[in-house]
Image (cartoon, rainbow, N blue to C red):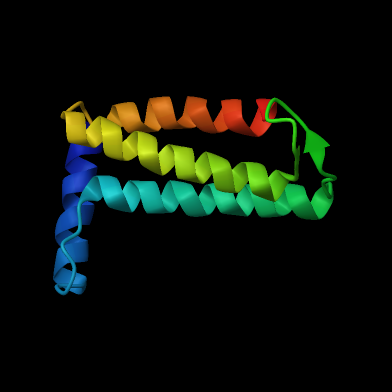
Length: 106
């Protein structure tokens, strides 16, 4: 219940600050998580540069290619889950598992 109240407060404040866009708390949470994810990946790329490797797809993919593919799969998964009418938090669970699978196995 605490998270729902927090998201509601964030939603109200964002809608007051930026009335040209209709904000939802879940979208704000996704954007924050996405930028945290990009920051972590940027640090990893800086610390340990990657070389293209051949995975399940049998084509050489670098870390950036895998991240792009995982982002495409994540967005598609989110759209499917939301369009079916399932709870929004399933997008975080299923999407996170899908990103881990794509980044480690492809």
